[in-house]
Length: 169
Image (cartoon, rainbow, N blue to C red; front, side, top):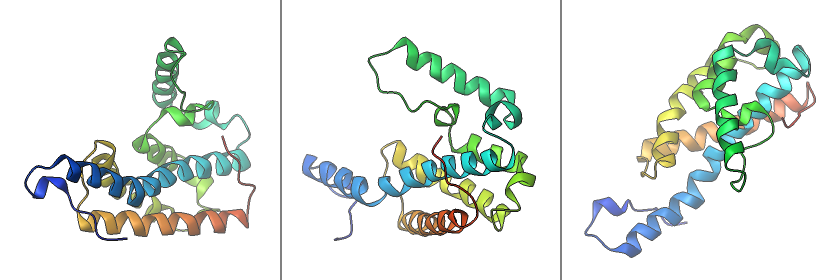
């Protein structure tokens, strides 16, 4: 695939805007989507195995649960809109997912090697993720970070599969 070009670096042409969007849609967005949702699955799977099926109510901070409930209520008011998911974990963002990992490190440490590396990795990926989510073009180093972290996440899932049941929340 040829290298994508940020439309903002040349004279305006709506075709360049479209091409930038298509490039990011193929190149970066799927990986960021996978990263965020893989961590939802990792968190759910580990805490289901280490705590129990109702881990959300037991170990997640009430402020994070409250945020998720508010988002769920907002979606419920607009029933014609698609919904992020059934579980509260789909209504929180990467920062909240990272906080769940950090606060519940004792549950993750036996199953997730180098947990601090993952917490730091999620923190580092947040800016490039937000850049793409807000329809901006990430820098080449950010694209490289996305690619590497995505590969690492796939390896983490493979390692976890050997230890616990992987469950979709």
